[in-house]
Structures are given as C-alpha cells and as structure tokens.
Image 1 (cartoon, rainbow, N blue to C red):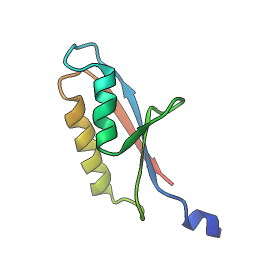
Image 2: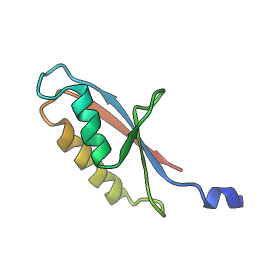
Image 3: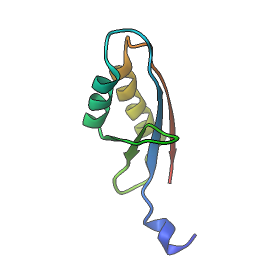
Image 4: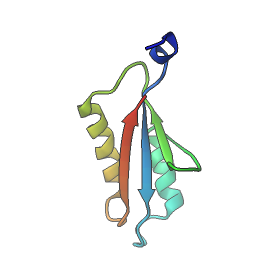
Length: 85
C-alpha cells in the first residue's frame, strides 16, 4: 500500500432506520449520536464515527455498537454499522 493509505483514518459508517415509537424524535437521536462522536451526513450513510490514531479492534467496534443500541433503546429504530479505512 502507498504512503497515503498509512495516513487514512478508520471510520465506522452508521445507517439508521428510524422507528415509529414516540419515545425519541429523530433530532434527539441525532444529538445523542453526536455526543458519542458521530458526525451526521447526507447521502448513503447517515452518520460517521472517525477513529483516532489506529485501526479499531472488533471489541471497540462492538462497544460503539452498544452505545448506539443504548441510544436507540425503545425507539423501534434499527441500524447497521460498517467499519473500514
């Protein structure tokens, strides 16, 4: 791999499908995701988490998924995570 690949940051892309329960508004969910480090985007993904310094371990990605799951608890929302450089 070239030198430019060494400097690439690993990212976790989050695609979110909002539920219809009234426990949290989508805007509230977005604010809570921002608080744990996700940035919102328009396009094929809804949010992106950029990992600092290194490739995340499987455990770190699962811990992030746990945080997302806790935010979405009782909302009826479902999500998908995709992590790569």
